[in-house]
Image (tube, rainbow over all chains, first blue to last red; front, side, top):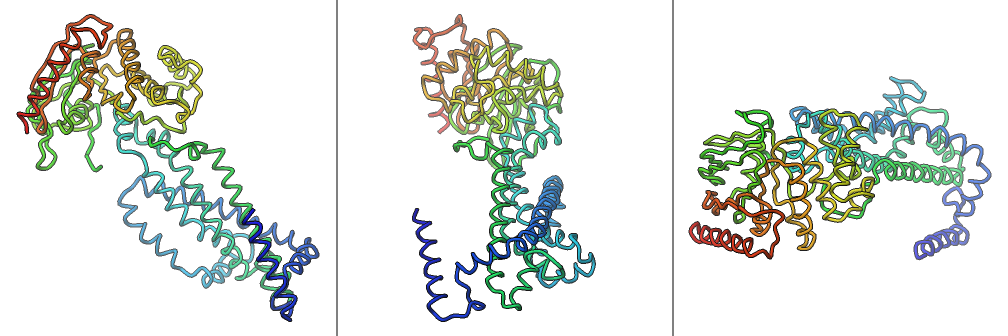
Length: 248
Length: 255
């Protein structure tokens, strides 16, 4: 209720400022103009949404698979963890914006370089949270499993993997936030379509309202991916939302 | 915790179901947890170990389970399974699958494992709760599932570490009742660590009293009373008083 009121107030203020402040629409379009652009360009936005949506969803899926596999490897081999973890943190300092054109040069203008960039950006939070999930097992639980004669693989199958699942999905939820930005940069670096490409074109064409509309669609895409992951978590890991108890 | 753990099958183990500790000493750095402890549990005997906090009771169980190795002395025991105070049920499995876990770890197929777990849960009065999620169960029910899991491991020796320590008084009395019942039907060698002297006298064939750190055996009291026992039985209360007295003198002597 309060949140809705706040949004309304904000949009109202923006509208009034844009309309009455004598500001050109290509500098700051009013919300109604953005809404108009959303409607007028719906075909264009939809086509580009499909492109970026595909990059986001496949990139996230790739990051989840690669991130989970790497986390498992790092968890299983302690020395590997010590050796690779710092490198992993290092990769996060690579300015993706600047290497994106390189990737385009290597992998062409197709879907692949975009997937690589989105996955590169998304994969770090997934590795970190999955690794934490794998290591979150109570030491007492490990003792119990040992006396029950569980092997290393069985411990993973019955205890560690289920514990890491909601953690990996939480990591993916964090990754969604940066994944959208990564997809836009990937399209900046070389693309003929997608919301990022649309943004890049709209601004010099002084179609500012259209650019804003693309941003709105991009935000909606992120919210959609986030909800999808939340839904997956609810179905795959219902225990993560149980009323809190201290065990397990 | 960075303790180095031995595989439970290692070490000189001969007669299944027999537990023998001879002059066992266990140190952690400068702290001596157990000092020359000798203890024996015959097959199907229930031995309660009582002692103040820090008397090395849990260490003793971990030695028997092969989770730790003694620094001196000898531990001889068959396959022993640990049941910690916290039930440690897995929230991603329902009650039935939690109980059936040891069978699945022994590579038994899903259906027969569940059938056996179902039967045992029914004996423990959990009919209708087999498919419940762990967090939907009460503390007493969770502990029953944990006991079912322990029994289904098929191990001849059960090491129970304060199994009912987290339960309220009424639930605990109830739990002691069904544990006694289960052990009457399916006898095992049991080491029961508890700080509740009454629980020890109600359930055990013998009560071993440990001193404060470093843990030594200060009393070994036989409980030659018929079962089922009642907490209000004068013979039970008398034994309880004796065990408490030796516990108290041990604490004064060790201080």
